[in-house]
Length: 230
View (cartoon, rainbow, N blue to C red):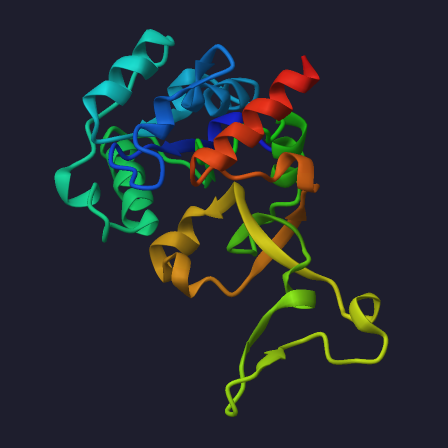
């Protein structure tokens, strides 16, 4: 499916408070701040006017604007807490632009913590989008079902899924959200919210571009991957 860049609002959410890795959104990664990787991908798809970094943090605003992208607003304090939802953040961004007379059909949500995603992957995910679905979401194949376990009623560790004679190879394929790409139907977002989405299409990404930064170990891994490519 072809798309018009003016139909897509790119939202890059970047809250200031990060407990797993403080300041991670603007932490220097191989010569540029982490958030810049998402900005670069967005710029390969649309213009700066259709891009929105949503943040409450002045340091992030300064870094983004020094990178050449204007930050349209300071995210309200109530949307910058640990309990604030992505759903609320996205609706706030949509409402901001609609008050200015700019109406979009879909949101491309790019989290700064997935710097290895490629422009080609984002374009392929967008191409899967249809107006009759709620969202295209990026996933990667999961090995977790083969090793998931918990204590049974006798207190012994028991495998949850991998109980068949054939072992891991006989399990169906499972996927996990990797946090890299979300193409969201704005009408669905307004009507149902992210939690009410029941018409999702997956876009499968390989392990090597699916790493999501949650802590310093993820950061070091991605840093090593980028350096090895150079």
